[in-house]
Image 1 (cartoon, rainbow, N blue to C red):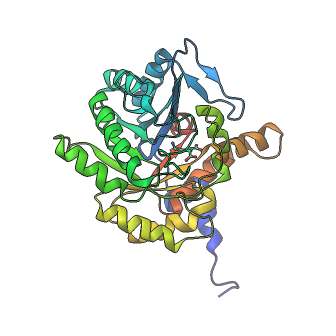
Image 2 (tube, rainbow, N blue to C red):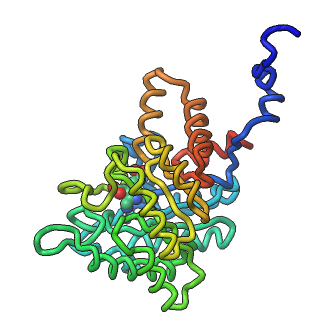
Image 3 (cartoon, rainbow, N blue to C red):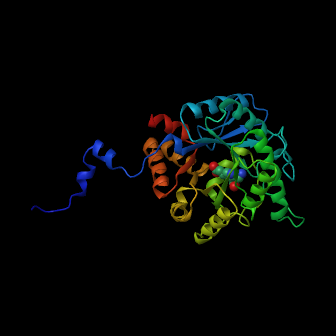
Length: 324
Ligand code: PBG
């Protein structure tokens, strides 16, 4: 027998062998497209910090929602960019607020042909930019915020959201919102818990996308990037409180957390490839530093390989076209 006896390269020898043995596959149904919709916009508004991403008008949003269905994507996640903000984020649970108007428009376009998700958080709607309402001392008031989230969840359910995505990292938010939905007879609405969400610099470009001017930081509610075990506690609590889906966010700097969560969660695990992850690849590619298409695919395969079943990515539509 020749040497070496073991030749792993045989399994990499041709494209068809590699395809046969691939352990991880991307499918359009795994991908969810996050979209921004801007109150009063008559045309899509391009975002400087996220080349290729826009703030939609209601009309361009409807068109994109139809594409999401045509491409067979798993879902669409809506974020609102309101024209006016105040201390309690009144636009968030106003049926005429931009996010709720947009949900109604999207649901009218797509029916049940894709999954319509709404970001459930106050930061887009508050003038101080925090994810909750503030106490007199300026800190984020956890329990007062829960009541706002419950009201927001009911407004989003009324507007047609299949899924409410709780992204504010308040203690008890999943259980509180689940109870409020159930009490209103909306036990049909799914709760996606942004269970492990880190206070991340990679959310930077998102701030431009939603025009949020945050004073201070989110370290008192989002997680410290140093901690992984803490993420497992957050996931356990969200599962106990009734989360239908749990998410880790951002994705690429937290693949160990994605893996750890996938090992303990008995509900599907999602990961959010956030604005800064998108911007980083786009900027490096625009500067000729990396191969854009390969980097996008590799980043998504990596996130799935780590254990995410669902990936939220601003490249969802483009990748689905490539996969076809
Ligand atoms: C909260 C929310 C944020 C993102 C999604 N939901 C911002 C934050 O928590 O600071 C960031 C998404 C991204 O960066 O792509 N509404």
